[in-house]
Length: 134
Image (tube, rainbow, N blue to C red; front, side, top):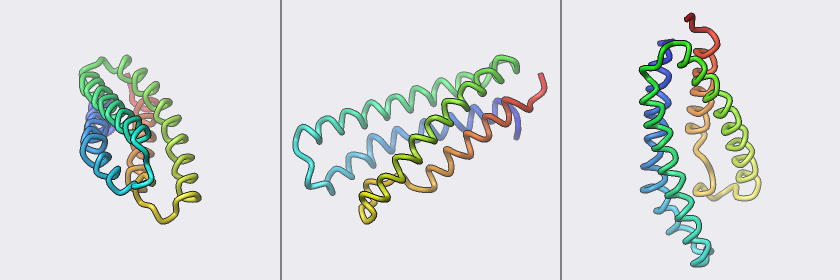
């Protein structure tokens, strides 16, 4: 449970799943946003596709890290955990702004379950990176 290989697998699955979020679920949300003009819609669509490919890239990279030696895996998990902390901070900040500005528009919110999963994966990666013995 607390082996780097398991952490890499969990992060890989979670990030790879986001290809569905950004390529299937995301575009369907645009249909509900009638106030977007054509340029905004085009730019948002491009950003969604780029985000989806980036998440898949990270997912594949994490999957390929499963066979690293323990010392390298710990370094990579520590770096990943630190970057996930930054990602969590930005995600929570943006969600707080969305809750204030768009309290009744679910398309503008990150699901709280997704935020929780990101937080758990952040803690998991940092914990394993700092506690696993070489």
